[in-house]
Image: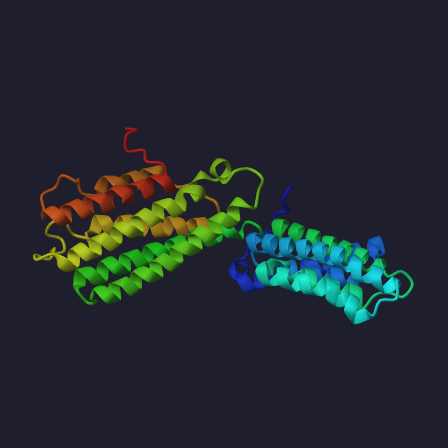
Amino acid sequence: MHFKILSAPWLGNPVVRQTIRLLVSVGLCGFVTWITNLQEPGWALITSVIVTQSSITETLSSGRYQLVGTLIGAAASILPITLMLYHWPLWESFAIAFVPLAILASWKPGTRMGVVTLMIATLFATPNDPYLLPVERVLSILMGVGVSMLVTYVVLHEQARRDAFRNAATTVRQIVEMLTQAHNHEMDWAQIQDLNDASVASLRKVQSAVEEARREHWRPLEKRDPMLAELPKALRQLQMDALVVTRAVLLAENQPVQGKDEATDPLSPALMRAFDWIIQRCESEVVSRTGEEYRVAAGVITALPDDGAQGEEIMGFVMGVLRTDLKTLIQLLAEDDTKKA
């Protein structure tokens, strides 16, 4: 079961969220080491700081590297410790295990923690029980990784959904900006492509947030939040359509006149109303998971021009594709009840 933390505007700041997660992780890890009376709690605290990242994906990756590297290093340290018990020189014993681990770390950078663990266990071994330190190190890593995973999963875990819809609204705004600049011929194709790159970057943030949301719960995202699961796909299609439309507008011999033919006008009032509705709907989901008046969405869809309207052939085609995918996105964000008369 996830702990639910009340939403507040300042929690939208990723720096604040990560600070809270890090403080909770270190504090909880310190408490666990105190309860278990771990002899060297410092390693567990250090691990919690290293592993606790700003997202579940990064935390899982960091924790995996820490755990795998520590297990490899602890296992490798048994050889030089045993050799030193038989009066082998320190540095010769250390080199026998260090060289293979150095090669492995160069080949698989994720195993670099094994080299660190080998150094700690071999060069700073306890005189009474030289095998104790590798065991302590593994226990500390396990404790630090476990606490970090728990904190990342349960503290502010619902922020990924808000981030997805916040960046979705930004993406749609950038799509509208592309269409506006192309229609007004205030930018050339190279500048339009720069705007498109910005919208693609925002779209990547949406996709990353959705992937983060997938890992926040054991239930599939398609079942617990189908709107969020389908959001990146619908947005990506709309973004590609908008790029094609802007290219067609720039190459068209007869530029569409605003208000003259809504079927080929990328800035028609009905189209702008649809984009504005999508932006407002995404921003409302950033604040809280709320329903939407379906009749409003139905009215927005109904107001869009028919694809069979008269107009320049190429522009009519690309605008028809744009409107089709626009309706798909609107239906995703709020059920289309145009047929429920």
